[in-house]
Amino acid sequence: MDRKWFTLVAVVTGVFMLLIDVTIVNVALPDIATELDATFTNLEWVVNAYTLTLAASLLVAGSLSDLIGRRLVFIVGLFLFSLASLGCGLAETPLFLNVMRGVQGIGGGLMFATSLAIIAQSFQGKDRGLAFGVIGAVTGAAVAIGPLAGGLLTEAFGWEAIFFVNLPIGAFAIFMTLRFVEESKDPHPAGIDWVGALLFSAALFLLIFGLVDGNKEGWGSPQILSCLIGSFVLLVAFITVEGRKDNPLFDLTLLKKPAFVGASLVAFCMSASLFALFLFLTLYLQGGVLGYSPLEAGLRFLPITGMMLIVGPIAGRLTTKVHVRFLLGGGLTLVGVGILLMHGIEFGDTWLALIVGFVVAGIGSGFVNPPLASTAIGVVEPRRSGMASGINSTFRQIGIASGVAGLGAIFQHQVGSEISKGLAGTPAASHADQLTAAVTSGQTDRALEAIPGNLSAAQLDQLRTVAEGAFVSGLNELFLVTAGIALVGAIGAFILVRQSDFVVDPEAPVPEPPE
Image 1 (cartoon, rainbow, N blue to C red):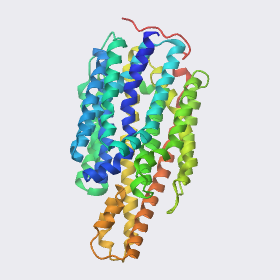
Image 2 (cartoon, one colour):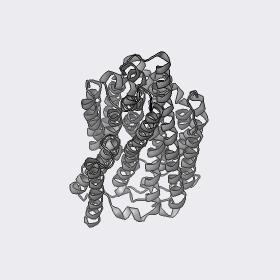
Image 3 (cartoon, rainbow, N blue to C red):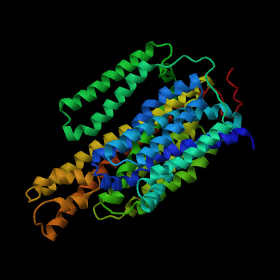
Image 4 (cartoon, helix red, strand yellow):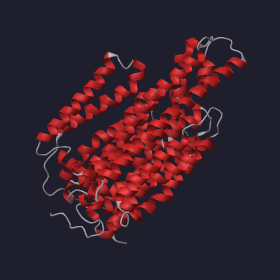
């Protein structure tokens, strides 16, 4: 077998491992909350600590790989990710777990930023399109398999297993990379923009921190206002600095290409809608309302994740036959429609009320991933593929991080408002905040047991009805918001992604970059 196909195996193994960690953790969150006594904010950070550091490190990793070598950076990322996974599995407090998740994200950033560039270097012509189709399908598969794999591992071995499983996978990926992947880099590296990296990372952190803690601290509090205003100021400073640098972290001239802007918008909206919604759907299926076990919850995600697996390879083959704007725009339209079909669930409904929406959204997601992977670097010269890959992947992770944080703020507010109204005038009214905190983290039963006083069975049933009804109300609110985000991305894809912006015809041979 040609060496390049072993290169593809090495890269997709690493990409699969880092991407499955975005969703595999979701079904384990209720168990983590119980065993580590974690709050809803802690659970948000289990997701966001990973995606935030992944997003913050991607642009630096892309530039670093162009400078010192993509293979080297990829291997370092594999080592770091594997070691941090061990730390996650050994965590005994939410703080230590989230710190390790952050380190995991840095390792994932080193891998993710270099993956597409390594593929672009190793493949040309139609083989290149096939390789991008494979990596796009693997991207969808990782997201798709995550909930089921997480359910199996959590139920069989405990939540720690979702992290320990990365150790043998990481070891295999390291071996394959050392054995088969050839080194490549930018023949004319411009260096690393550390100032830009610091400004971007700080702006992103303040934004996510402000969104996550907004409900708890109050949106008008000095702390939250300082975070949000500081994030905006740092972002403006970042844009100003990048526009004046010879070797920017984010080459703003890329934004002159509508197709690149469209691909970035699609990446953000895909992640901020459906993928960010997974956290809340998991809490609904498990601790929030329906009370399924981790494995049972993972199985009930199959209508959506199975469609991703089935449609992904089909979309990969279509990238050379159908204009990518129709795949990206049409796919996101289906995602938005699918989420709208989930809206309207009521207290007392079974999970079957979601199944049609799951199928439609899964089909749409399957159409988006493969062409998104190739579009991001298809509109730049091969030597800039590292930066283009990093930027597009950054928008994916910013979408998840900001999506989870923003949706979490909306969710907490809606649930809290409904619980306060439902308990008004009852003996449990003084415990509304306590119940809200428990409901949003999927621990309704524990909260009801902890409420002091000799409540009758009828009163406890009333509290449960209020709590679960509030959760359903909050989830319905999120369905409307995420459907809107997906449809905005679809419109952007139809308008911005133009064939004329591609550097080469996807079916034409791609010249090797100069040595």
